[in-house]
Image (tube, rainbow over all chains, first blue to last red; front, side):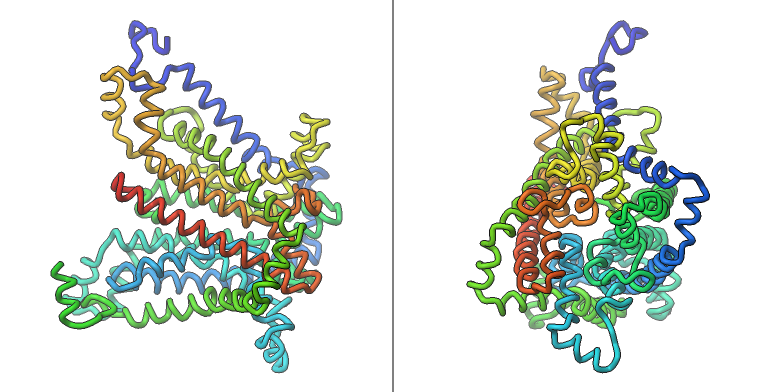
Amino acid sequence: MSDNRRISFRNPADESFSTKLVLVALSLAFLAFFLFLPLVSVFVEAFREGWGTYEEALVEPDAWAAIQLTLTVAAIAVPLNLVFGLAASWAIAKFEFKGKAFLITLIDLPFSISPVISGLVYVLLFGSGSLLGPWLKSYGIEILFAVPGIVLATVFVTFPFVARELIPLMQDQGTGDEEAALSLGASGWQTFWYVTLPNIKWGLLYGVLLCNARAMGEFGAVSVVSGRIRGLTNTMPLHVEILYNEYNMVAAFAVASLLALLALVTLALKTFLELRFGAGAAGGRH
Amino acid sequence: MTASATASSAGWRLKQPSIIPGFGLTLGFSLAYLSLIILIPIAGLLWRTAELGWSGFFAILSDERTIRALYVSFGTAFIAALINVVFGTLLAWVLTRYRFPGRRLIDAMVDLPFALPTAVAGIAFASLYAPNGWIGSLFMPFRIAFTPIGIVIALIFIGLPFVVRTVQPIMEEIDKEVEEAAATLGANRFQTIFNVLLPGLTPAILTGFALAFARGVGEYGSVIFIAGNIPYVSEIAPLLIVIRLEEFNYAGATAIATIMLLISFAMLLVINLIQAWSRRRYGNV
């Protein structure tokens, strides 16, 4: 019944055409309700009152300050985790040592912790009831309800992204290339720059992309440590919340649409990397 | 055997010898950074909880509002993860087995919940499923947003890629010959799928469920807009932590955070056990 050119023969290890149709339709309906409509609605709501209002909502000083703060925080947090990712994956992939599996589990830890708790731990560490907070304050250093706290919370939640992409990739590649380079007289740094880095660059880019998307979009952890001072400690996701709670829907969705655009660009680049360089080159999705 | 023999004859040794340099530097830096950013702050949280003492800890946890909030968080995350197991597995099947226009696009879009900031997802769902929203109005007078059902909807969105991306690679590796053998031996398609294919997929499905569940329990940004946040009804545990913090009730926030943290660690352990079990049984996850 699926294919009448072949006298109604059906591969017994395959579903009938109608079954396939139903399953595909069911999947698409599910995705429409849970992925596509929410995404589309962000842009529809943002442009509800036209381009002029949309533009106005984005150039408004508080929104502009939030955009700048989000970019600043990501510009600090992503390189920090990039350096950590390189160091950790070098140690883990190029050497055999005791406690390695435990170390990998610890690196993944932030993924299984609620973002609110990620923020809370810094509130407890630097808050008014702590030892560190008042001491730093006496030297004029503000961590909590200031930019350093936001950066710390962001570093916490984006901690595993780069390391997690690089570790499986570098483990797959083994140590042969590096050993060859070293035996030919290259120094450790030369080996890293000219041998290892070219091998892992696409996986590294992939990890940085995901790390950056999360850094710019983090909400829970940042909302706990930020104090939400408009124009000062308000990131884009926090600004979206404030505008939404003020029933300023068009402005809330306008700022949200920028973040949605960031997500779409991230997905497009990620897909491109996977298609162009294969799942292996684009990190370790297992 | 020889490696362990030489290691024991040379005494305890942290790492096996290698000509590659940089072990001390990279491991030292990694451990220092890990301690500063992750371990010390978490230890601080546990220390603060220890200061409460058992009685203080249990007094906070036996508070009716705390219990209800934990119940809402775990209950909704469980239901959402179950729904994701069904649709996530179906989606993984459709994406690996069938060819239809737009498949590539849909495959890429499955990762949207990983990439879309949670606050954006939150306001989008709240406005869609609100009584006057595109979807919410279809279901009136039955309300979705501002009830626990709204929380489940948001958590389905958040957890979906965890199930799909865990199950999909295992499905791709299934050898078609296994199904053909089953068919030759007289199994119908239904029997082949449920008795031959599904058992091999179980570890991946369980892992996907656990990951989606763990993420759902801690989720905050996408939930608070659609939940309505009515105490005892649709107030999630992470929100209660935030509320306690805003009241400067650090002890309350700390105790709830610690119990959630302990449950997350238990979940992590379960995920690792599932994977170890399946490696023993099926050779790979």
